[in-house]
Image 1 (spheres, helix red, strand yellow):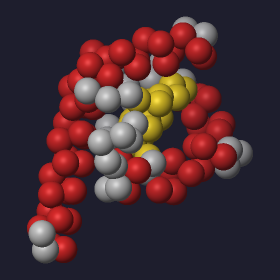
Image 2 (image 1 turned 180 degrees about the vertical axis):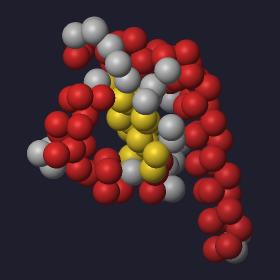
Image 3 (image 1 turned 90 degrees about the horizontal axis):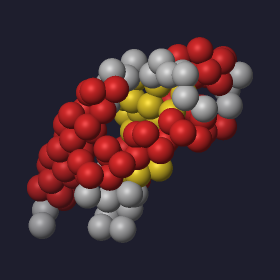
Length: 113
């Protein structure tokens, strides 16, 4: 396959993932969703998971947030997802402090919502 065709195929695959993520998370009304890792770089293979930061208002304890979101994504994407869910306030604070995973996601990631 030519390099150009391969790039187009990766781009279509990424756009399909974006749409699936949007549909799966729409009922939760997220403020922002950032895809990062191999899927954002277009390097995802059959064994890759999907790495996401989801920003949404919630009163749930931190660990329960991912338990709420992960099954929706797993069903929609047909693969595992590593999800971090932050409130808008937590996310802004982590952004301002340039906290590791958030800084990396903002640098290499792609905003889905």
